Length: 206
View (cartoon, rainbow, N blue to C red):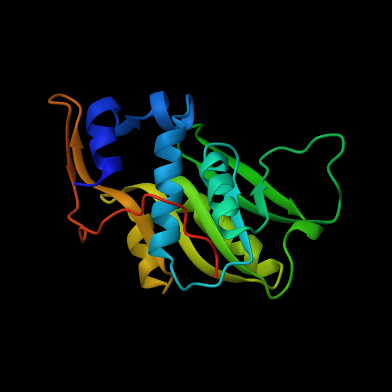
């Protein structure tokens, strides 16, 4: 069992309708030590992969992406879900359905922040049906970039997102993969993964 699986068992709360709340350390209150360990683990799992930019979607993936961008020493950009008065017209646009809010979101990135030929590492906190990740992949492709890999903190393995992305040929790394969980018993079963020692210090980009 890795550090994130242990943290989920300790502090995660299962709600009805297959909802896992990790507000206390990941997507409301942020425990910096956990986020740092997640970033180090992604850097280790994508060792040898060239990365020119880290991409996520607002808002919960930003903390992880920022620390990872520091390890790679590359820019971090996040796709926005709502336009503001200073939003530009020159932007890449895609759509992603939010199962949390039960609505379709337009997501966008201004043209200067994704460039042709860049190798982009996509990062997010959760993966369920893969809508948000596929929207980010679409934005990268619109810009003429290449998806270098996809890093997910928590994957809901009983939903199809991870399976589809792997079948599409993407290098997907999920630190914790939940195969099933039960609200009544508050139990979670994780998919076994190769046990490898986590790096304790930042791995700087080559």
